[in-house]
Length: 438
Ligand code: ADP
Ligand code: MG
Image (cartoon, rainbow, N blue to C red):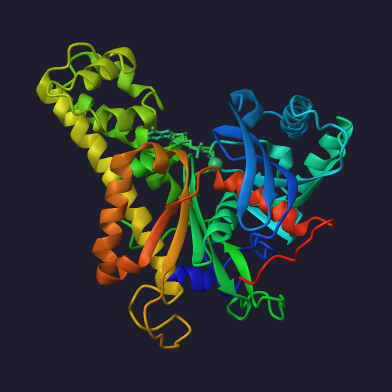
């Protein structure tokens, strides 16, 4: 991971890790004030948020409205998608009786974007099952601004951020030792605070703080050291984005259930453990990750929840206890591998930052006392699946040893959206504050 981070920082295309500039060189300090909105468009769910902040890291009020993104919109047109988003914001503002004011909007858009400023950037490619051909290459903030204007709204995007960056912003707002953020939801990604002089591919990049948040797009991480199974290859072949997002396809919520389904399907073909039920197991994505989690977390002595899921969702009636145990085991292995890979990735970032206890930062500088390090983390898979969390924590301790005591993983609920609203505050023209050094 560290080698690939260096390569991605050295040149565009130098690594599968894109290491994207975010132009976020200042993070909220806690002195922001006012009402800000944000939109979080990330994969499975779509959120509209209103955040009211007062001085001193106080979030006075927040409102979150969430809805699933209709499937047809993920494969339709750019216009339809952004109109849907703009109309959702409009009805939210109507509900808040706040249609008239000029408002700054944070736009969390969790796909790889080539940013040209903190509020502009073009889509590099879709991930997480989205495939809307004509969006690639377009400025997504401009797309949203146009849709907002068409709806008659006096709201403009002042911060276009990745979900990781929003999460880092909220983490940092609460705790200045926060240096990185991880998302483990439908997809997975990470960002961290890098020194501008280490971003070699952008010579002469100057920021007031001397640092900039880098969006790693770690879902696309790949390395010959990463053992790939036949199931990973089969899964890849089923997706819109073949040969990309290899790390994400081993870790995130969009894929874990499907990996387990592929394993179970092979077992059904090569043995008679599932009787005649092999047919239903041949349906791609029939086992969702929340079901995989429920199977793994069934602690009833006769695995009755496993029986119910097999029967109702996989159309496998009457699986004997021995078979149900086997299914639990498969779900466990898939979960454990994902959590351990995510932990290894986090350890990689800490190593790059010289905070993994090896004593030497990647810049060659020797560090003194270990420093307290906070990593903000969020996402439906991490937050909704305790066993995944336990495996991740366990692996991080295994990798870091003693140093793990100085490392805190902090869940920032709705951080991707709230953080974007805070960044909108930092970067809006009527700001009180310039944001703080990072
Ligand atoms: P996004 O922001 O990408 O829409 P979220 O962070 O809301 O994603 O996470 C949603 C994903 O998390 C779902 O697609 C699902 O795969 C996974 N997920 C949600 N709840 C659970 C759960 N209880 N157990 C396991 N996975 C879950
Ligand atoms: Mg999200």
